[in-house]
Length: 457
Image 1 (tube, rainbow, N blue to C red):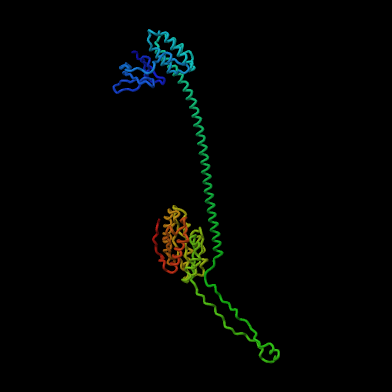
Image 2: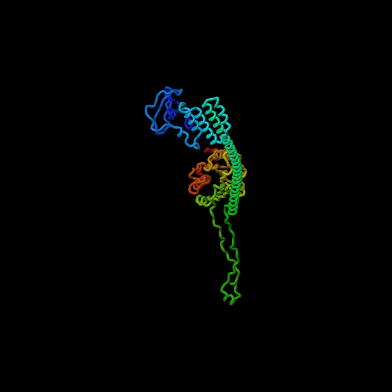
């Protein structure tokens, strides 16, 4: 039996045996190759060695007719290059006694012409192949046909690849331009965001300053100096004409009954008003909405409280007018200062020395208490500087015996508003009033000239 090597339509290895084409199925561990019939519905298999020498014949018959010359040729318009090569191999594998070699070569060349016409190839390769055919075998002709077809296909693929590379390059340039534009737009948007944030911050600062000035103006308009304002004026020194009956005066004008007398009345004494000890609380925003309730709480203890609040004010702003407010104070009265929260702006800048000159001057004529800065729950990292600020305040006032320190470091998170900076009215303000009342009545445990424990969150 004649075994001829060929390829499938897809270019895979195949063999022809008795006009039946077999494709490579698998390779065994012994090195033998198993070939299976190319027909989908046929399960016939054969075995060859590595040199394609037939080792076993098929034991059963095929369930389909063998490949013929007509079935291989078919329609030339639908043949591919592999079909042409397979057909040529098939023609070459025919018995030379039945089919002359010259006829086979002519058929192959005719088929090659059809292939070159289909792929728009020139006739020059065919002429060269015809000349070469006279001095070489049919296998060289087939190799030249395949080589020329592959060159043509390679040329077309190269041109196609060049077009695709150019399109890819244009797409990359467009993508780079789009990315550059996006980056420029992003930079512009970022700059606009920064400008908006700066403007919003300035607007917020201006609003806060405006509100602070309005509240300060309102406090100054409503401020009154506490003390005894009861004065006595004598309105009873008047001359009164006392007469008898007017008819008797007309009848007896010579009598001495009609005389001018000065009515002697008792002098009225001013009502004795129990003098209350005055309390002045100067604070930042922590003193807001505190005056009325504090005055009601300490009235029964003999105090009259006045609260001046300067929201947003620094320690110096809060205490700069303390001497003017306390000119007529004595050591029965007291001044309490709650300030310093607005001097701690962030968690990096350390607090500096405070200006205590106005407070020291006031302490020479009245008692003064300074409260520590409460801890914050809106920005917990700033509590480190809050502790340092309180330590600095403690160190400075420890040199003066006339100034007391009131600790406000025991407030919890439930005592603050939802924002975490100010004290709420339900718990925080009530606790602050109790601390102030204890400071006035002497139950607060305040320190004078001593360091207090500073809690750092």
